[in-house]
Image (cartoon, rainbow, N blue to C red; front, top):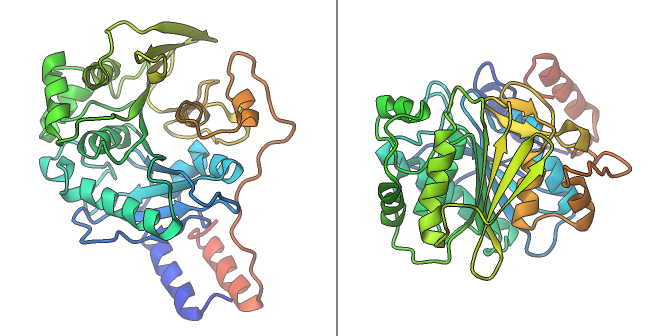
Length: 362
């Protein structure tokens, strides 16, 4: 039975969720950063019911006007993690840091190694790694929009920490240091040259390789973050991977295109999904059973969640078949949504029913 003090603490957490966004889904467990938390972020963790001894970890950064629970509900990361046995960590922004709940990807004090929000995310990762025995060679980071730009910050400032990253409708690292510059870059204006982009990435840490593999997803009808930012992110990371400007191959997936770069051993190290006709948001394929369309969560007939996990090597062959957009192969049954532990006493049931009635719990 959950103690009364635990329940009250949980009520306080839920009642303090950002306004006008979905409450944190109740199977996400609160996580405290293991340190000073200079960026003053909170964190939530999805833990699969069955996991290997050394599970992988995916760090997911929500977009503006979103929170951990809302983005998880839409993107389906915890549902996929429940099926495949990896952990999902959601750092969460607050309105006191940013009125629009955007991660401050353009703020120099939040985007330098061992400072601000970047350090808070690093400390949240450290907490989860220590508590759950995460495989240090299988830590990944992804995000949407401002979260995608912040994912790029993490890849640039802590490249030794991550095996891979994914930028969904995001921006390159280090291209803005003020709000006005951020808006210019979002419009695709005043982006640095390729040599400058690559220099900023190398200057972000003293890392000398190996470098995280990178997946970039962007709609060609995005009027919030111009598609030029996807090209700039690819140019930024081509340098450290020593890749040519042109991809090694291009794949047509329905109306969309996947561009693939391989290293000298033939391994895929960078990919770009150019999403035809899609605006600003995370591309979904709800028919796979993981995701829910909503604001900035767009049914594109192609899943960034499953596709990225596939690129990172986090899925089984069964999910491989689901991840093949060209064939649209499906599993026999949709994966089950993770559920919180069932209440085992009437007091807890009454409290949770009251929370649901108040709109503070699902």
